[in-house]
Amino acid sequence: MSDISISSLKEQAGDVPLIASITAQLQSRAVKTTKDGKPFFDLSFVDSTGSISLKVWSNTPLYTETEKMNLNAIMRLDGEWTQNQYGINGSEIRWSALQEDEIAIFLAGDPQTRDKQQRDYAEILGFCGIMADPRLKRLVEYFFEKMGDRFRRTAAARKNHHARRGGLVEHVAQMMRSANAICGIYPELNRDLMISGVLFHDSGKLWENSYPEEGFAQIHSKYGEMLGHIPLGIELVNKLWHDLLNASEFDAFSESKPATDDVRIHLLHLIGSHHGQLEFGSPVLPKTPEAHALHYIDNLDAKMEMLRDAYAQSAEIAPGIYDRVFPLATNLIKPLASFEGEII
Image (cartoon, rainbow, N blue to C red; front, side, top):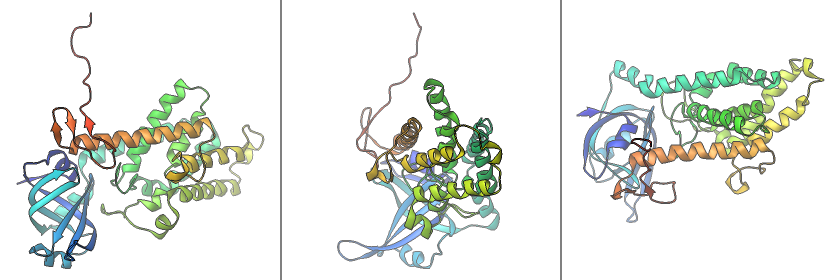
């Protein structure tokens, strides 16, 4: 029986049962009831590449075993897997505990994902290292000094896009590439403000979507639940900024233009407005060129990640037509391939 990651399981599973095993960590376990009032467990399992949900019904032998299972337990799940528009389904599931050496390998993460995130983090540091504005440059340095490790293990979301340990690094790196390219096309954009805005726009997710030092089960915190990542991001950047201000690190720039406090408020505006609409959680609408650009860059990268996942997971219901995958609104059409042939 082949041992594959959760992302590979989603790519390979379809209508025909796939016999495979995954190694995963139990992130959550909730008791729910059917319409007939019968209890069942709704489980969420995670690894370094993503998550899946499984249901354990009360009339199956696994139900009693599930009651005894510890949250954050790491185990191997063997079974037959299929997939439809609602997600992965498992049958004939059997699970077993891992040895210590196997757990250590699991906690190290999928090598391909780990290597990609290391490259992305290095590229983020590269973009931040060439900032011209010394105040923004010092702010991002201070952020990495204080929060670098936590940033590297944070997801960009709980589901839908980049919902994995280190997913925020992947999201931010791709957004920085886009921001850097767009600044070369629209000279009215402040490149330093765009790069720092990309870095900090989701910084509140260090509390909303973070992970422990070891493991792949997201942490739930009162801060994340009660405040949300936008207010938390504003609070974080304000705190870091005033730390530097109070330490006299900005004194040398008292006569610089733009004024130091103008730089701060423009950066905070990017965090506050990046969802683009009040009904989507932004406390304020975008009011600057950088705010509008950041909103669309963020939305584009999230959508492209959702599309990649959807094409990998969705069943082809007719030639070139793929079944809808939440949260996308419609069925997908097979993308047009690039031109191949002789150019005349």
